[in-house]
Image (cartoon, rainbow, N blue to C red; front, side, top):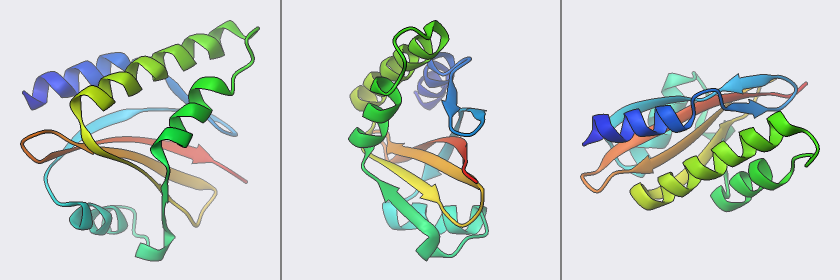
Length: 132
């Protein structure tokens, strides 16, 4: 089941970019069966960051911003937003406890979207924000 979910999310995010001061693609990964507390610890270790630099973002506000804050006359941006909306709808249907976490402290900021499958497997979508 995990492979199907990963393949579907990967397909939904194909060509989708996270727009900040540059454009970053999204990458999907299976982080195994870890708890929410273990997730934050793993992120801190993975990105060599202190736990205090992990900032949780409201998932609804995060996705609303990506989906609705686009210039309607910019066709590629509108298409990108539609793809993000479709992916978010899929995530909400298939994952629980969706969390968005930024690893603050540098101009290249990892942004992780994590959620859980019914069997407890943690799926993580990674991208980067560039903010100078």
